[in-house]
Image 1 (tube, rainbow over the protein chains, first blue to last red):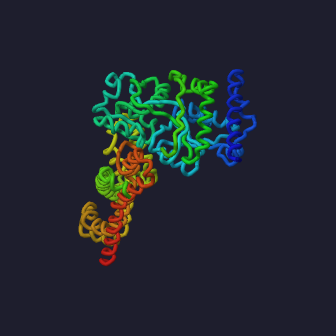
Image 2: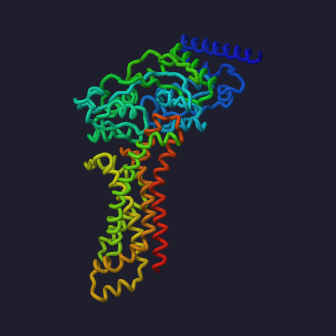
Image 3: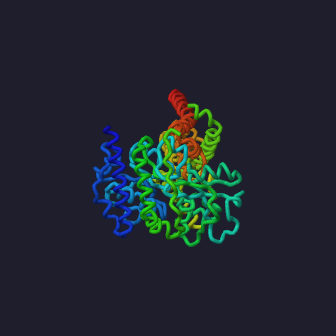
Length: 293
Length: 216
């Protein structure tokens, strides 16, 4: 009986939040109203814990233009950062109370498993292997692997032109695995971060850099001599990583994302960041997958 | 454990790259380090100065910085190295040569000064004194510390994983992508292959140390 009451309360709270946020969007009144409402989360839930603590630790990238890039003041900026701020806002946590922690491609699962971060919003591709160790809310965006070359390079217009070319990517990343599996004639040159690929590209030591289109778009936006080539050749749904067993928190983030899709805050976050370079896409459909499937 | 057995051939590929990195850069470092040690005890001041600057600079610089300098800074001065194995060899050999030089120099200093005086007294040149009298004695006593330098080099090759070389650690990362569920086992496999290299080296060092101790 008690659980049933709890579920009812949760549903009511979600409805209330949704109504509150959509009202905000219509009125165009900013984020403030989300942070001062009563936060009724089920006792013992991660949402209640974070909301009571008034702070959340978010793992994001620090070197990813348009998504997570640390400025001179030490605060990261970008679409991932905005998404994390919106989620924190729905927990009643203001942006300045968020603790940002740098996560790179190879250590994200470890950070989540060790509890060093509450959530990871870091251009984090949802895949089944990672679901064995952590879980994903979302997707909140569908990216795809693409290619970055020098503007004056005319040889490479898509993945089929890669035979015999050397392509820089990050050691231990999904794009690297994809290149190795599907383009065996390509010489894969792995570095520690994507930004380290740029100098070798300019020096002609590699012919292209390959990873998700949005990451490449960030580099192209900052460097006039670089260009994203061809259509994306994979589908990379970006999810929000969190502890594997915390299904309540995951479903709450999914609900929150849908609220953000509906009330325009997602679109605004996109247009303020990545949308300055890339067209605004339709919001994706969140995947409420079963943990044991 | 099953995971490591299933991916044995992938591990072995990475292991062979680590082995080649260690062997080639180790050999170069031994040769060049000995030359630098000779510089440091030579009668010519410019050579001594060069030897000192070389060892003190490289010995006190993080290896990652040496790689950064070679891979990202050198191209800005028009030196564009081919990415991958040979760039890593140059960085590792350069860095390790400083440690080899220090070990060899300590060995040279450990040889009784009377040996050098006697050699000079019978008319040997500096080169002959060093090559025929001092170094043969010095090298014997520095083999154990040199093996320690090689063990350190073996582990240091892992830095190359961040600079376009797919050795053991980078291989481990690749295996990690497709097999997140295997978790720590991926790295246990990497560690095992390092031990395959370093433990025999350690045993060898201990053996030689015992033998040298007897000879004295």
